[in-house]
Image (cartoon, rainbow, N blue to C red):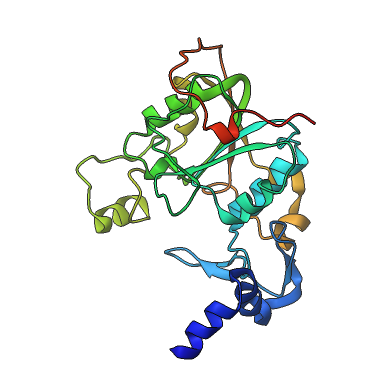
Length: 269
């Protein structure tokens, strides 16, 4: 125990992660979030998916695919204000390095982000973000419709919201039972113990009802099978679909609560 405490105090987290990932180094797979090469990734999930989690940065299939999409489609442009909800470290660490980006990382848990945020009641004025990223969050929110409306409210008319979520491509409609309130029940009905619902093919409809135009994207088809296999980008149908949204119409500013002072706007070049 004493050695373990000494080890933790002596080495920074990044160094400890690097040492722990050394046994998995190789040339077969690559993580585009951290840039390292591995002979294999780690399993992950309640029903373990093989070659899913990066041994160093913990990125999953959806994170690697989303990072390809954000960078290759130039969504992290110079001078934008970005809202990232429940920020994954593998993505957040890269976005923070970008210059001339005002970045708001937020979570309801103060230990997971710099800003504490309930996405069903965001403390931001209307029309203030250029890009919003919400990856596998909505299924864990009791009132997801209100949360989606809040994203539409705080997004600028020219802005883009990116949603990803667990869904069942076999179900035309979302499975949602208000009476199911226990982890065991949620695991039985939705496949994960902390989900409030399992979205079906009607998920884009929920986004449209909040005032979004929605484009459903399987970006693996753009990258091709070789990159999808090398970077382990998942199956695409139940976890990795990207829903790119734009507001259908402008909304009037309410001027209620401004952005945090440190992200009131991007710094001039």
